[in-house]
Amino acid sequence: MPPFLNPTSLLLTTTLMSILIQSPNSLPTTLLTHPISTHLRFDSLSLSAASSDFGGIVHSHPSAVFLPSSPSDIASLLRLSHFSPQPFTISARGLGHSTRGQAQASAGIVINMPSLDSSITVSTDGMFVDAGGERMWIDVLRETLRYGLTPKSWTDYLYLTLGGTLSNGGISGQAFLHGPQISNVHELDIITGKGEMVSCSESANPDLFFSVLGGLGQFGIITRARIALENAPKSVRWMRLMYTDFELFTKDQELLISIKAEGEGWRLNYVEGSLLMEHSLKSNWRSPFFSEKDLKRIKKLAYGNEGVIYCLEASFYYDFHHGRNFSRADKTQMDQDIEELLRKLRFVSGFAFGNDVTYMSFLNRVHDGELKLRAMGLWDVPHPWLNLLVSKSNIMDFYIGVLKGIMKTSKSMGPILVYPTKRSKWDERMSTAIPDEEVFYSIGILLSSEMNDLEHLENQNAEILKFSDQQGLNYKQYLPHYTSMEGWKKHFGKKWEGFVEMKSRYDPKAILSPGQKIFAHPV
Ligand code: FAD
Image (cartoon, rainbow, N blue to C red):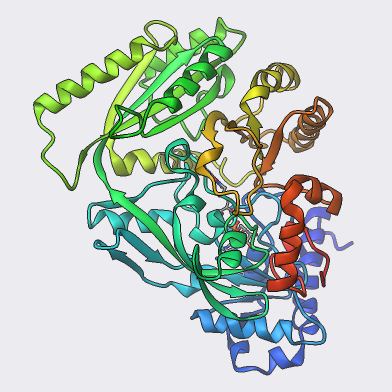
């Protein structure tokens, strides 16, 4: 070994060399000589960016990265693969916020979706927005707010693409009211695995429409989505309430999501919750909320409760863009309504906190945390995240076995989210697998490996899944990851047969999103 190369840099150099050497060879000449080949990139920077993701755990090297300038470039690429005697795999990559290589394509082609850079068009009459699948939700929000309008359902973090979240679900604290993001789509433009460009909706090509929603990128590439809009609020009352008892915390969350919808009474617009661990209160990307003084009291409360308390988060939107002015009397009424609501809840007395913030800063709250973590060099660490949807009837079993059991001594950093949502707000025809109970919890164990503890966290995840299986909990993985066909079959349950049928209809050669590791090539 040359003296200047340590094992790590040798590994790096070898990897880069193998990327460079491998690249064009595995691709057919029909592609390399086609006019769209000018959109292919083989340089090591492009290839290594497409070989990694937010998870930082899986690294599969593609043969090339494709930078489309229009949907028809993508259609040509897909047709070239589909009709080739040796089809190559293709993965749409939004921004690579996946955690297990789902947007990667080993020895295939990764499409860098942001290259499309398409426009965002708002229809104030139709109350919808048309945006490219590569556009980020933050851009959609900025554009719709220019018209005083907004999409209804969100993710906690807005620097995700429409194509990426619609391939999964898109869940946040509004989902109990409006369903996930996939429940708020009117139309999609799709390029199937056969290279066909198809517009679809509930009434036109409904099988493709519903398969793609939550379809893990398996049936086609989303190049446009039409998303439902509503009147946007200017302001948000954002509240956090502290509990020392998990059961009371969840019962109160369930109470809040059961309050009747607008027209039938007063209700909240957003309900979430999380575990606040004494050790991770400082470096939590979700907490630019408390003053230093409050943080000290909260830490003390957690210290006296075995290091953990439960934070119920709820928001109420007010002062809307379209409608009458929000008067001082309206504000007084709102304060009274909120006071009355809080009186029904069982948080620790003196531990209710509220802030009035703009709608934009409320929705974009995680970005502040991101900037903080980036500055500390803690954003680009491995993220072995585990997301589960657990039925209400099993939430206490999960709490005792996992949160209080397996994870009791965990000192790892990162938020642990726990909040309920409603099955009736999902359309059964969509691909996403969810528990078959009306109320189920979204649980995000969003830990970062900041302390060389990746192996420990991976083992912990495996133990959590083993426990949930052995106890027969009614749960599904969200942003699922399985390595065997058996795992996927069990995950999709009675949706599996339909999922396979749609795959053989729209991507029979299993070209699309190979990083999900569902189908072998060809189906
Ligand atoms: P990518 O990771 O690039 O792609 C994800 C999958 O979708 C891949 O299989 C890819 O091939 C496919 N895909 C991408 N674009 C398209 C397209 N146009 N057409 C078809 N298939 C496509 N999720 C929630 O539901 N709620 C949250 O609150 C939430 N918060 C998050 C916070 C952070 C900090 C991060 C990193 C992720 C969060 N997520 C959340 C997860 C997020 O929804 C997924 O990572 C999702 O995949 C979006 O990321 P992306 O746009 O970068 O997609």
